[in-house]
Image: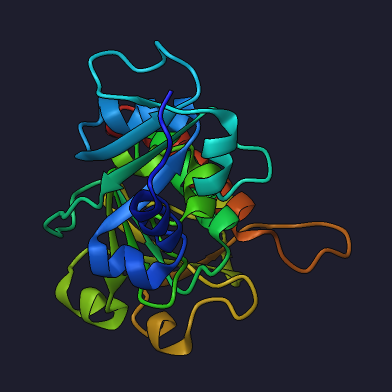
Length: 246
């Protein structure tokens, strides 16, 4: 076993902050499941630490003690392994099928849940506004379980400009509008989801082709955005399962 150097500790702990993730173009992933997902997706690995040998085949692993892992982990109970990866750069473009656009989704847990659902349903692309939670933050990664590596995800997007550049129908999911179950859903569309508190911004709604709602009973005013996203995405999946990413 080795000791984690002070310079390594300084680097890894700095990556708990968005400022340094953006500056260094690196992010931290914890736990063997997520790390293996990222390795399988061929993200560029910067460094890898584990308290157990044999978890990662064909990778250079620094075996450290649980005490040393606790020095660099952001978790109360560290999960065996920690890795630093290079943030991937991807060229943006809108594809056919369903593209998910997120307007100010601020909770990393909700973002992670949406990404995980999108990947499970075969969605191709997800666009995040500048005010949305960060794609590669530790909390988002825990919520998504690394699903973003199998999606084309683009963060820090100007959504108004994006809406002006596309010719596909734009559907805004809100508490007002036609019922999801009573309306047509085109095969190719943009689905916009809004923030947990304020919903979709009025300027973005003005770009929408149609507003769609999820019917509800009882006294509940609205659904969690992660749940709402899942309902719409899987209704789309039910109707067009033959055209989603296989």
